[in-house]
Image (tube, rainbow, N blue to C red; front, side, top):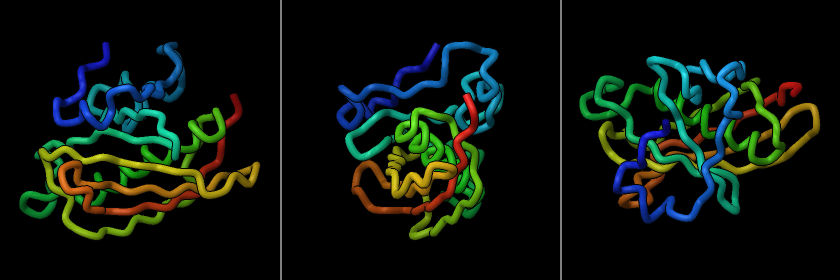
Length: 156
């Protein structure tokens, strides 16, 4: 069962359709650390379809802290990786795996604070897809980190 969204996200995500992995628990991505609903210690990243691509409600738990009050850079990269992978699914209808990932850290990403991940298609080259995204502070819209990635869609 999918947990309800944090109350702070209701205005942003009400009316958007959630993009989910297939309901089959045997799906090979159900155990994915980032997006897998069946991973016992995973991030359980959720994404919703938007006109531009996807949006993701994110609250990074304090136990992922790096510098005091801010998320560890690796966790920020993991969240952006998932947002970008979800963008590939939205754009192509196929799951994708990361070929390249570049992250730019703009500001400290606070823990225990509502963040919105956003992703959009740049170019579908057929064999691979280029996407870009960002993490924004929900209350201010301030861009905290950006990411660019090249993903390879996997066969169905």
